[in-house]
Amino acid sequence: LFDSVDRVRAAVAALQPALDACPGVVVVATGREPVGFPGEDVRLLPPLDPSAAAALFADASGGGAADLGPVGGVPLGIMLFAAAWRAGVDLARAASDGVGSAVQASSARLPEEARQVLARLSVFRDPFDPTAAAMVAASPGGILDLLARENLLQIHGSTRSLHPAIRAFAAERLRGPE
Image (cartoon, rainbow, N blue to C red; front, side, top):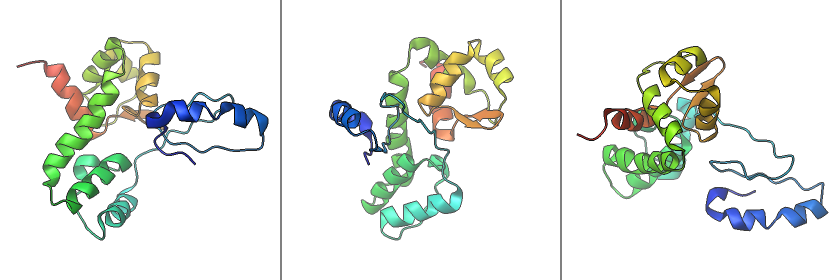
């Protein structure tokens, strides 16, 4: 089991010869991007439901409770909130700083066209269908797939949506510099 493989990508890649020699070994890895192993099975995880999010926060914060609205059910945001709560930091600021930094880092890895599409998608307050997304984004579906792989676009059956923190970041980019 490897968590946050994005931080240790070279070390994980060094496992490939061992995996080739041991075909029965299964590796479970979490990360923002696929590792790239042959036969890799990528699973995009939806946000946690409210009760699971509250339980994760309570566990990570040592028994605390908080309004998790700004981070939704995103485990990274919940863990950042819990760390801030333990440190006595204002949670509204933690949401802005921590999740915003994570969204900015994800956005920075995208090609410019994908960043522009993400900004245009911020006009949707509610879930939207792929046809509406294609019309507003003025972009081929491949960009939407890229945004989903980067966990910037959530897929719920036949609808798509942006997490509120991602939407706020993207809307700011759409507005441009003041």
